[in-house]
Length: 113
Length: 112
Image (cartoon, rainbow over all chains, first blue to last red):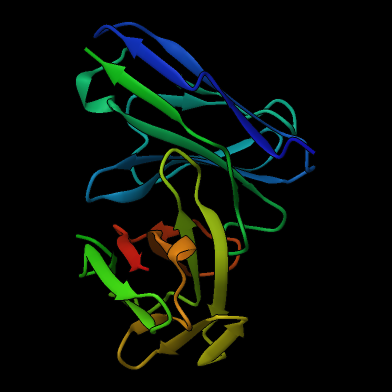
């Protein structure tokens, strides 16, 4: 079991560029989420999904898109990167819901210049 | 406005003593509460949880206490070990299926 995997580990973007952060899990979890971690802010929910084909917005969804075509994958797209999106991004999955134990990936450190 | 607050950004404790990490919340609809631990350059890992029907949950050295009337919970680690040095996040949700809101975290240092 690889658990939750994220690629890339590090990324530097220029303002206005777009990119996709990849997330995959091999635990057959229905629930998947994307968070960003900023100093003093804790983890903030960007988007989440309760199953393939179903996504919803979290606390800070602006500037990000998601889709969930399979149970395993939940990519996060930055449409036009801005310096305010410099952060560490974590993907997580859980079996029954976010109120239960979530398994987190190792994170992607993104810098937008 | 933060719905989940951890007012101590950092805490230092001697090895073998008790560590007490506190968390306050403002949303009275929260019913599920979780603690996660995070080491540098790693993703958070689940530690312990409690639902509002209980006021205490214990797992080995870790105990979480919930005081719903005060909208307060705390995590006790006894005895503290150097490997417990990490950032601890408190989190809450209205239902087990609802989105989770995290606090800003408390950095715990356990001094040998």
